[in-house]
Image (cartoon, rainbow, N blue to C red; front, side, top):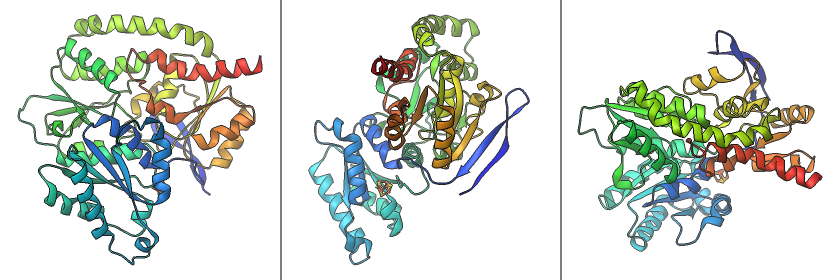
Length: 427
Ligand code: SF4
C-alpha cells in the first residue's frame, strides 16, 4: 500500500489543486468491457478475445442483454494445456480465425483482443495479427490490442482499440486542415455534432472510430483533433506521432463543456464569433432550460466519485458548475494533466482530488462523509447501498449517450434518479 499527497502542476487561477495519490487495492473492471460499446459502434468489426473462461463470462454478462442476433464478439478460450505451454496456441488461434472468417463473411475488421491470461503466457498477438492479415487481407483487416486487466481500468480498452486503428488509417489526400473527433459517441450524438459542425461551416468532419471499417479517417499533419472522451491518452499519442494536433478543450458534457469543446474547433477553423453565437445559442438556451428542474433537485447535494470510468473529472465539473452539487471527493484512476488541464481549471479551488485507489481507505473516507450520492463501480455499489447509501453505477455513464446539448438534461437525470428512488423507498 502506498499513499501520498502532493500538489499537482495544474493551477486554476494560480493555486495548485492538491491530488491525493493512492496505489493500493483497486476495484475496477478490465479493458475487455469496452467491447460492449465498441462492437456496436464499428458495425462490421468483430472482437475475438483470446482469453480464459473468466474473460468469456465477463463479456457475456456485461453484454448479455444486448445479444439479439449473432454477436460480433467471442472468446477463443485458452485451456489449461495452452496455459501450461503444452499446445501451440498460435496454431489453435489460426484455426479459430479461419473458421470464424469462413462463417462470417461480412466481417471486415477483426480485432484479436489480448487478456491477462494471454499476456501471462506471452502469446504475441501482434505477430498473430500480422500473420493472419497477410492471409486474409484485403478482405479482412486484422489488428490487435490488449484488454487485459493487469494495471488497467475498463475504459482503457477503448483507448487501446482506437490506438491500434491509427497506424492503419490512410494519409490525407488534401493539405487543408481537417477536423477529427476522437472517442466513440452514440450515433445519435455523432449526428447532432455533424449538424452543428456543418452549421458552423467547418465542413467534412471525420470520426475515430468510424462506423464502418472502410471509413477509417485520413490522418496526417493537417489533422486537428478534438477528444470526445477523457481516457484516450495512447490514441492521442499515436495521432500526434502521425503529425496530428490536439485541440485543447474541456469535454462535451453539459452546456458549458459542449460550448467550450465546439468553440475550440470553431476558433481553430476561423469561425466568426457571431456565427458561433447564432448556431449555438438556441441549443444552449434549450439545454439550460431542460437542466433547471434537475438543478432544483440536485443543488447542494453532496457527491463522492470513486475512480472508475475516467469520466470523473469532467463529470465533477458539470455537477458542480451546472447543477451546484457539492463535491466531497473526485477520484480518477489516472489523471492525465495535459488532456484534463481545461477541466481542472474549472473545478472549485478547494476540490479534493484523488488519483489511483486504495479501496479500503477510500471507503472509510466515503463512510465518514456520508455523501448524498456515490458514483462507483458495480462491485462497490451493492455493499454501499446495503449501508444505506445511494449509488450510481459509473459504467452506465459510458453506455449512455451523455455528450452534447441535447443530452445535458439526460446526464443530469442519471444523477437525480437514484436520489428520487431512495426518497421513495424512505417515504
Ligand atoms: S482480461 Fe483479466 S481481468 Fe479481464 S476478464 Fe480476463 S482474466 Fe479477468
